[in-house]
Image 1 (tube, helix red, strand yellow):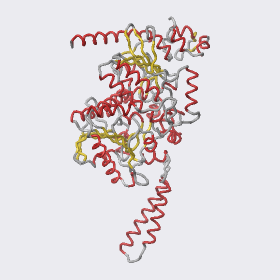
Image 2 (cartoon, chains in turn red, green):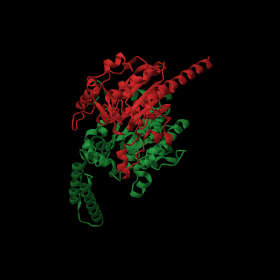
Image 3 (cartoon, one colour):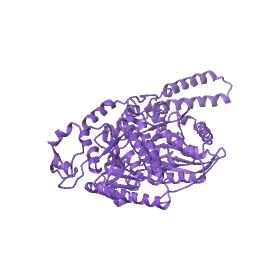
Image 4 (cartoon, chains in turn yellow, blue):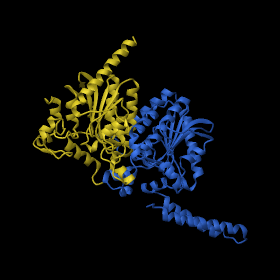
Length: 286
Length: 323
């Protein structure tokens, strides 16, 4: 896939180093050449295991061409002056350096299969994709702008839940994003979520499951309580399939499980149905 | 474990002795009043010493005190209450109690998380940890409140949402997410009172409100101290450390603008005078409802949106503390 110019600009210095590396598949143990792995959308060529994907890599596989980022100027603060083993600002600085990201989500606008849409992509590599005030603010800005422009919105989730180091400010982001989702959807705009590994806690208990259509990647771990918490509560080991995308599909919690290489096509189809429906409504109300 | 257990024993012992002396002097001509006064001053001294400036961790224990009034104490103190049951899908979760009632003549929908007051009730109430069926009941009652046109009053007291196998199988995330939507959309005033522990999304599912009031020793946090310690350091036993970090006291949250009012408790906690605390909370709920009565439904929804829209501190110039 040709690398769009904005992506080149965005990619951190770590990328050249990574290109020479091998990655071991956590599922089957296969050694995968990093460049081949990237070309295969970070899916193991042997067993189909879906690696956790960086936000900009993901965006490049979903949008047709240009992507206009919004909310990038929104930066973290340290509202509780948190410091445990490390200070919170030091943790943030470390994650910025390692991930090349300014925070746990990238938001903006682009076309998907010819349909313009709002797109937000969370990245587990930044503080475990946890939602603090910046993630909450960026999601809210995205939904508010999409509502103004009457565009559908797609959110890719990857999150360990609310960010502990921001305390109640983090919990309040569930309320804030819910308010934004509710206004956005209340005006008849469609919200689609794609749940990737892992989607838990506060993100799972807010916009992930407030969407009109909920898609998940194969093998993604999705739930409210983390596996360790449940195992400690019930004092027994959980079956391996518990809380996987496939398990949730069987239980009726999500609409579909879609392999990474087909996700763009599915989104484009949903956007097409939405566009056709909107057109019909417009004609019918004339 | 409980930092107060030993000191409370001493207080109870003093209380008993004061009571005995009082009973004795009532029947006899001997003047014991100076001894009683001495004991009482000793008693007050210990009270101030133990409870005067509690740490966050001590407040967690006051909030969890077995004799602290639970949601049902508030609900049964209403002028009238008619409980409504069930989620209409699967079962009636006893960890949450809700229904229509009258508060000083005003019709309300009251909903509260209910922990048990003894072991037997705790098992039936699942320690106040609500399952998806419970959150679906909450959502149903919130929608019903709008149908009736009556305000919603919630009493928050939970360590967190139930973390069990069946809760995950029944889509705990979706149940909480949709409860958040129902409260966000409710066209009636909402007043939330954090009367015990407010733990994470499981508490917030009853917590989106136009006015949030909190008892002086209640706690409200992104995760329970044990949960936070497990998440950050994979060690739930570091809960005390987490409690100090989380800024979970009413005083902190008032300073941050996350809650709207702190309701004082007697020295030592609500457990020392439950009836007075219940009356005081209901009085403050009533006052909040009176103030909200003036807003039209669309004004309410706009004000609620703007309130939560502002929640969060970010950016270089974000206020660090005291925003």
